[in-house]
Image 1: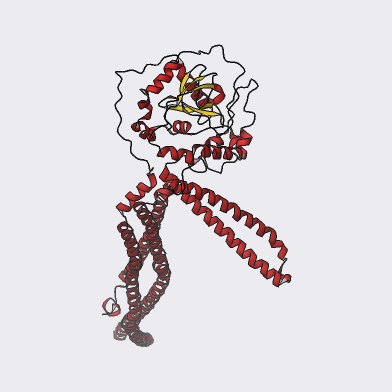
Image 2 (image 1 turned 180 degrees about the vertical axis):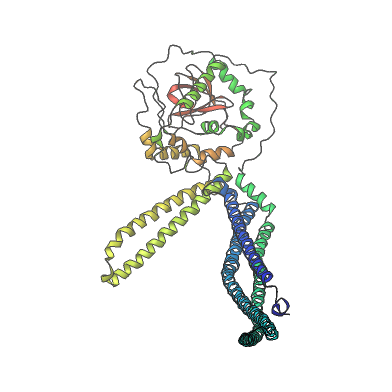
Amino acid sequence: MSWGTELWDQFDNLEKHTQWGIDVLEKYIKFVKERTEIELSYAKQLRNLSKKYQPKKNSKEEEEYRYTSTRAFLATLNEMNDYAGQHEVISENMTSLITGELTRYVQELKQERKSHFHDGRKAQQHIETCWKQLEASKRRFERDCKEADRAQQYFEKMDADINVTKADVEKARQQAQLRHQMAEDSKAEYSSTLQKFNSEQHDHYYTHIPNIFQKIQEMEERRIVRIGESMKTFAEVDRQVIPIIGKCLDEITKAAESIDHKNDSQMVIEAFKSGFEPPGDVDFEDFTQPMKRTVSESSLSNSRGDGKSEPKFGSKSKGKLWPFIKKNKLMSLLTSPHQPPPPPPASASPSAVPNGPQSPKQQKEPLSHRFNEFMTSKPKIHCFRSLKRGGAGPEDFSNLPPEQRRKKLQQKVDELNKDIQKEMDQRDALTKMKDVYIKNPQMGDAASVDHRLAELGQNIEKLRLEVQKFEGWLAEVEGRLPARTEQARRQSGLYEAQNTSAVNSCAQDRESPDGSYTEEQSQETEMKVPATDFDDEFDDEEPLPTIGTCKALYTFEGQNEGTISVAEGEMLYVIEEDKGDGWTRIRRNEDEEGYVPTSYVEVYLDKNAKDS
């Protein structure tokens, strides 16, 4: 099967067919190029999708990825990123192995096709020239034959005419012979030209054209083979990344199988467990026998001695309901102020009511006034200089529930231990460097390292003290240390307040010119409440019992954490005596209690009250 023998007369059709083959190849190149663009676009969209759902650094989302389900989702995002990379590989390989190679091949194919059809046209032009020469020789031979025939007829006519002279007859005879000779020459030339044309035509149709068409056939077959190989490469490029894509999918499946619902549930418990006990039953309060209070001090003392109002404050259920009390209110109730009490005013206010209980409205006015002042007052920014960056709560995390506080303290201890290890590694490296300098003085001065070694030693000592401090708090939370007494807690809180530079800077000029106590109290003092003060009260199921009554001699505005506002002449219950620090702990009702300066009240202790 050869185009040269089978299609010897289809030159134009072959030219059109080969051009169509090149167009098909260019169309396939365009198809592959668009496929690579789709792969790149798909990979880009996958990467953007993966990036969109990645957790942001230093955000709340990053903390959520500690659960197995969210970690599995994060692994899926990472695998999708690798999955996108494989599609980029597909695009790159198709561009280099198919698009680039076929583009170069098309250029070579066009040049080869042009050369072959140029040779074919040249052969056709040559055979057409030979044909024209044959036609010209044939027409000349035909003309000469006709001229010789006419000359012969004229000679015979002249020879038969008796009236024609002999000379004219001879001339006609010579002319006939000449034409006959010319016809013979034309015949010989025509015969030679014919033989030559037949030879050229044979060579043209049996040698030249078959060779040219055979080359064109081979060129076309190579084109077909090349496009078939490109299609195989097209599939092979996809097949090469299938194992890696399969691994990505396997990793996604593995991440999905690693999800542990029980573990996630346990982590929720660890994250939000407070360590508190659920509240107990609420006791029945009998309102059919209202508590009668008298204005006289003796009747108040008797009422305390009778103990009729005591169950209201001594109920276990009330003690167990404390987790639902607001944090700031609870802290104010449980926290003793850590500064000396203000001196009493020079004289009592004329508006004081020495006898008779205060009305509810009069009791609530100081609290509402304090709340309004709190909402409208501007924060003292200079009081936070000693606070660590980002630390809005106390250093010992006493504002957290016990379980959460324990975790925070443990985390802080671990961080400090890591910092100590880093400092020790630096110190060891500098020590080795110093030894090298001592052995080889030309390498450096050993004394130059001493200053840095001293700094590292100081840093390590500071960090160890910090570790001891946090370990002490941690031990208190875990119950490894004995509980401290109220007096010890108060003294330790006072010690911390006195040794805090920020508190000292904020606590200056707290007294106004008229002797009253101003609100220039450091907010850091509020945050320095000892953790044990907070946690030990959590362990008490019952509030402190009343040990007597007291009457407010002066009006006191409780501006600080742990204090309570009282109005002049107001009658209140005493639940803790002054322990030498100038403060007495009192209670107004079951939800309001705190400290007031001892010099501001007149205390009437109940001799029959039992110690709590």
